[in-house]
Length: 203
Image (cartoon, rainbow, N blue to C red; front, side):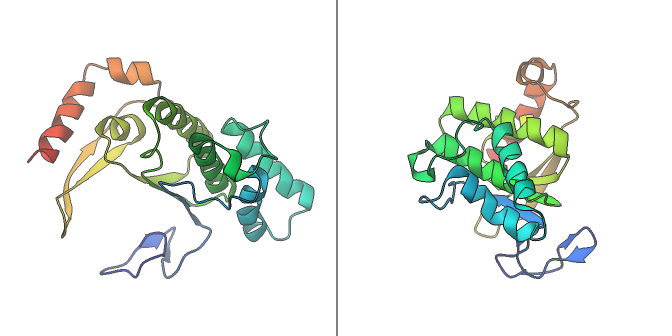
């Protein structure tokens, strides 16, 4: 609904003072599966959105935007590789670069690391936080991973069980930013927050 892909079932969704009516580039989505065009290169996949959002920019300016964000996600040497030849983790890096390159007002993350192995998942969490620290874009992330939610979020909104899920509770995560994984894990209150979330999910 926030992305404008589904009809709003009740109430209103307002982004920066404007009601959401349809999909738009002011809300970028990183999906669980990379959702790239496999026959295009990494750079060409990012360029699709950049062309739409910055239609009057010079080609070199558009290229600079694409290369900048691909470099930031660790793909500086893979601009010209076809998407189908990239690993799943690399494809998801392209998805993150594509989302940030749109300069959106709101970033939506739909379990973006859910299909990745734990090592790649951790690497991309760090990549996401590093770029976010620079861009400071409001982000809404969906995850089933309790530790991921504590590491990434300022607020964790817990949902009740479906099919008619609703907001069940809210937990404020006060850890300072920028965040380092080791510092978060060693924080004396980390396991209190983790226990609180687990207790909610198990009832």
